Length: 130
Image (cartoon, rainbow, N blue to C red; front, side, top):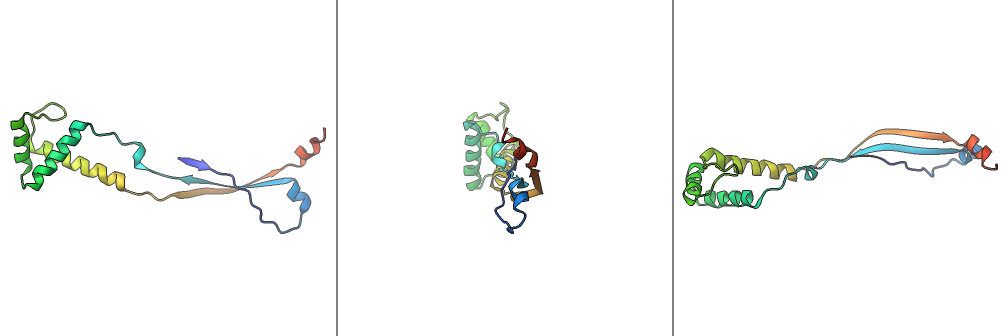
């Protein structure tokens, strides 16, 4: 998201009163903020169940192949309705870990495109009385 915010300065040296009254100064810049939270698909309850079950089975010391075999014996299918294999189990864990790492990553705010806009209101002020 890029946002340009015009800010007004109150710093004044006290001279050139005519120029000050007839001129607006705007200090402008762009602030860029990046966040991964806006573009993340949500896990279904079933996907989350599979992931949690895999974690529980891994804590019991089972291999990916053994976990796949356990899912198949219990009648569970992959999200794409296939029988489980060890690489499916590994992929579920890996993708969840990568997604979590992406969500935890912090991005610094970036400020750029600094410039000063000066608007001379001499002509505008001349016609305000009409």
